[in-house]
Image: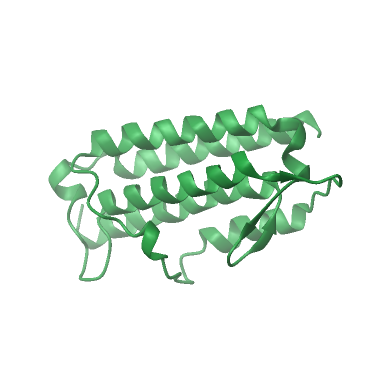
Length: 173
């Protein structure tokens, strides 16, 4: 794999990390726990969901099968990023990824988020040479290679960073 691809993925993950951290950094713990409306998630619930889903995606990446073929489709990568980040299309969260009130402070949610993002970076670096030949299956997106999975990790977190910003605006914060 071209070394610049890993550099791009690392940059994407680090930029996404800052995006999520910036979304919650100005919130008090009380404000982060407020739901903007009935049926909507608080910032802390969004953080819990991000972490839960990122853990699942990283499990897929870490346990992905290695195929003989190496296929990279930059158009598909861009589509995955744009599709997942798009908040105009609402997605139904699977029950296992529903927030359960795990976090009560912004600090503990950020600590856990940084730990899972460090794991994402470590996994991408560790499997760098195999990323394009890895394959995992997403229930809605179908087969994904490792590059697509890493992009999915970032796009999903960015989607919910936007949701946190929307919640803050709704709450007048």
